[in-house]
Length: 99
Image 1 (cartoon, rainbow, N blue to C red):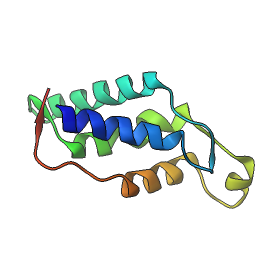
Image 2 (spheres, one colour; image 1 turned 120 degrees about the horizontal axis):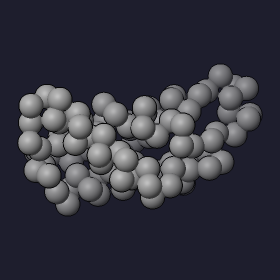
Image 3 (tube, rainbow, N blue to C red; image 1 turned 45 degrees about the vertical axis):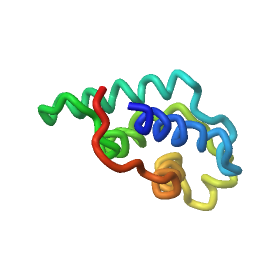
């Protein structure tokens, strides 16, 4: 569980440490990301969450919880694009993690 929790915290923390983002995701987003990941695992008939579950729901859970700079939007970027970049930058833990 610790690896998965660190992964989720790393993803959400990265939203607060990016130049493109004015307002990053709150600690509450971390909780909701974990809950949504658990729901995704349940939908797939698993009693454990994988990093792929987290990746699958990350953009949808967090995109409305951040605000990007207007100049970033003018350049054609969106919250979703910035979050996809974050997903590609944060190291993914190995193995399945039980919750």
